Image (cartoon, rainbow, N blue to C red; front, side, top):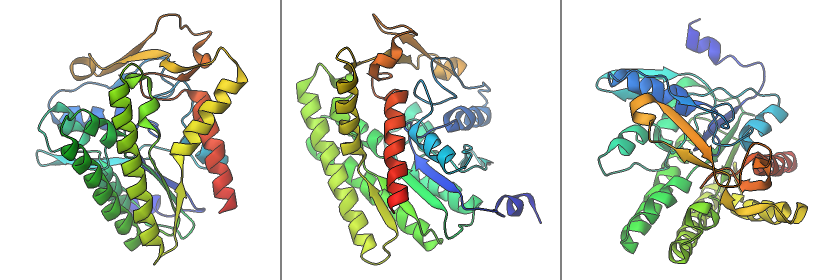
Length: 320
């Protein structure tokens, strides 16, 4: 029996994750480090505190809490080919910071990196590295970065094309998982992108972000309903509503809780050169009061929010 066959012999069901920064527990660090090696730019990617265990928050991300509740250890996985070289890491969490559901068509550093870890590459790595047990759970939560990318484009029709491409990609990937024997899939829609601190001072962009988020979420759940007419294997998770519920709860706990600003500013300026991702505390924030902020940075929620979402997902798993 070879190494891969050994990995596929499971004593109990496990969990697999397809996603982005809301679920990444180390793929950015290990995957980008491997990618830089093949680009002849050797460097060890590092995420410095207050990042928690190579995740974009100050504590465990929601899917890690869910996995631990189920008695499952998440390890980062990925697979890509570049310049004739193939590289992979076998794991069960393929979520990658910045990953999109669809590919980026424009040429640039971002597209070169993220197009090796989009939903297609994540699903391809998963189905090539593993065979599914009938009770394995696959969690899919991706699409927020497609919305963020669309917002940067001025042309409204082009914005909607990006959203539609993301849905097409997810439709293909989910059907592939079903063809390969997946029987338990949970798909989360996108959180409300319009409420993140990145857009707090731009009402026009916030309005458009909300419209694009709703377009994505409506199309995603409609697509899932269509698939479920035949298979009945996909559970929908309404992350959009859950995030709003979490924000209302967070406000109610303490009148001084901040739900508008990010606690830190994430800095990618040294990522390409040195492989280091750093943060600095925003004005008025420090280690003692960072937990009073709903948002960790301009886009990502803090550990309290992740725990709230995790408990919501755990309850849904129990009910289903």
